[in-house]
Length: 491
Image (cartoon, rainbow, N blue to C red):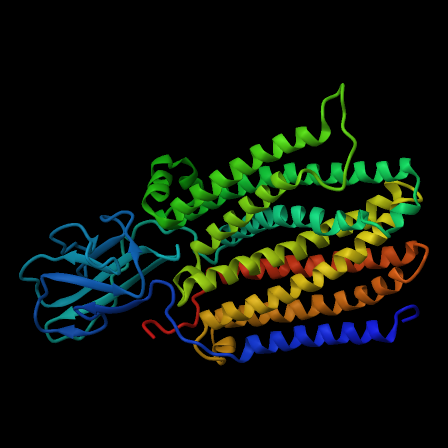
């Protein structure tokens, strides 16, 4: 392309090749570990016949479990649905991976069914109805009548949408702060186009950027707190086996989830961080704008320390998400959780930056006629470099996470979890192709002394397309959380 040096083109091709190789590495490196709360053993064995009537039934899972409602979430019944338990089910205090159900003495020969619903250590709600037989068989079908109410599944629209809006809220906040400090601020550094503008135009552009930041912060901060509440209600419906509407009015049930599960503790933790973030943001907002009698001039960024604290709070909230998911139960879980947080944060900086870039390219040239386009060009050049680093980090940390969740390359196409990963990789490649074209235009604009409005409009449309792909990737990620990884239990 005209204006782009051969060195720049070679550099661009080299970076694209490195990203592609990292993505390929994601597909070929195997590993081994354990997954979800999978039933790995039972006594008596489910699906089998035992000649001796047991006095107790034990179910052993691959990870720690929580039983919210002992009378409803664990039942052992005969072929007519009558309970044969001599006492409530409970988690063995000496082995939190084992569910224990005491049984009546002298159980008659026949088929019996154990029905359970437990919350695993990675916050997934796991349930099943399994049959076993006493005597000489054969084993009949599990008894499914009079089952407790069933809540939305983890792959339902309710669950996926709840995780989706949570990721958009927290990711948007991190992307917003990163854009302000890593893109907007450098665009006002020495040697940039703004130095050729009048003082009035510079001030107008800076005020526009400050207004954009705080408008977006208010929407995202409040939206994130609402999203956490929405997620709590939906998750409670799943864990309690009821509808979302019923869960919304069941304060006692929601209280049980908050106090009795790891998910509840982590959602309280994230809620506290978001409250502090909102309070800190409100204080910083007042400090930046001043009062009506003594307004303050806009600057590229606010105070350094409050902004750093706000970023730390958001990263802490992302750590809370990682702590309740697959990464927390993977081998070398601290490494996996760090990789997961960096993965989420990098994706947030990329996708959140795309949204803000599209707004800047769309509104700034018209908000500050004649000067806005020059500032937008510098913003575009700065974001282009940041986006490349962010996407590379997404690929590398995605590779680490894939290594922690799959036991063999074949699981990429033989499991739903692996297929979701392949879909994410495919969509990321589409976004990469769009980004490469935008990158070439950006390199051309950097070498031009004047701003080209038509080129900015082309890049803006490409940014919107790339953002659309990123939002689809985020939806796949929200679905991926509910899928069972390919890890081998006990390996």
